[in-house]
Length: 106
Image 1 (tube, rainbow, N blue to C red):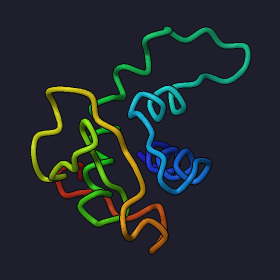
Image 2: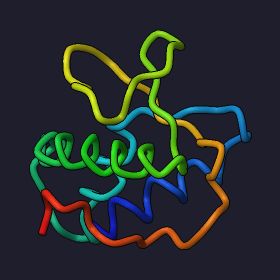
Image 3: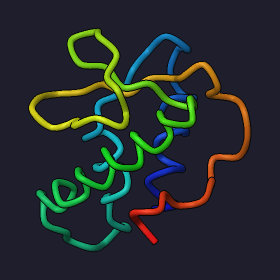
């Protein structure tokens, strides 16, 4: 999970403050295998539920925001049912990028 958290913040920091990322960018970044290995091209898909869960966790803290078709979503609600985008929340730069795991993950 630490790699997912790190990737979320790294990818967003590499973009303009108003830009968003797709959760699949995070999953692909984390699933990227070391040079010389031959991972399944679809391995990143298995990470998608966890990327959405971690995004919702950070959005609940105000560090990230989650949108669908440009409209903000409630991070405590159901994020399934369509594409989402992840952007910087109002508290993006506050605190470390390695907060405690949400209760459901412990």
